[in-house]
Image (cartoon, rainbow, N blue to C red; front, side):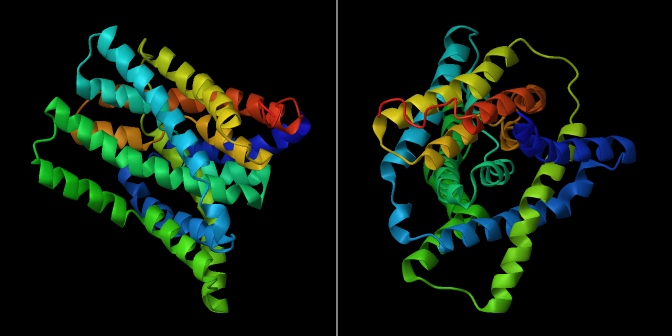
Amino acid sequence: MSDVFGLVLPFFGLIFLGFFVARITRQPLEALGWMNTFIVYFALPALFFQLLAKTPFERLAEWTFILGSVITTYVIFTIMFAGSMLIERSGIAESTVKGLSAAYGNIGYMGPGLALLVLGQEAAVPVALIFCFENIVHFAVAPMMMALAGGDRRSPLELVRGVVRKIALHPFIIATACGVAAAYLRLRPPLPVERLLEYLSAAAAPCALFAMGVTLALRPLKRVPRELGPIAVLKLVVHPLLCYVVLSWVGDFSPVWLFAAVLLAALPTATNVFVIAQQYGVWVERASASILLTTCISVATVTGLLYLIKGGLLPPDLFP
């Protein structure tokens, strides 16, 4: 158990440090802008490129793994969306944000750092593949659902253009595509460029986790709405459990790939859910609350999952 705490304490400690510093220095949220720019446009893209470019190309075409992971995420989204519509009688827009809160994990800021720390460099490929394809789907689903709800007034053509532009120009996806191309062509950047990429990659996880802590501190939780209970259970318990069962069933993946996918599924709600809620003016405060609540609870749930993985208590395949 001490080994597990040795892994998670530095990881969650960076989030706590960001939270603590933001509380005592009282800088506005806008002060985080340049750090977020560095993380999103340089550090994490460099990390994804480095990891993929050094991977044999044939290992990047695991379509069964990709589809299993993405389908699992959207089963969770559908459960929350349908429950919100049928039980709580919420509208499409609000139900969409609730569905994303239950399914859209913090796989960008938290995923790479945790998976690589726990599972090693071999986890890089499944993490990058899941991140890339899940985000492509997220970028398409959110505006499509908001258009159905009437919250997005753009024409269908403008909507499609916006989605394509968002996908094609996202720095993480560009970096992933460049990394795949480099792996296919077996290209290696010149030594000075390689060193620059290494410096940027090393900064990715610490900066992302610290920035996440700051963001949580500056969006305080005033109360816990009752809808957050199902969201937390779906996101932190049902999602990783379903991912584990589905990937064990559909393929014969290595333990590192399977556990990387389950770890990503177990992560708390992504900060992008708040951005989407704010963009459309729907369920904004509660989206923020879902991020804070699931992040706090994930300290216990993720630690428990790591204990099962590191202790050999979780079989690498349910259906050998």
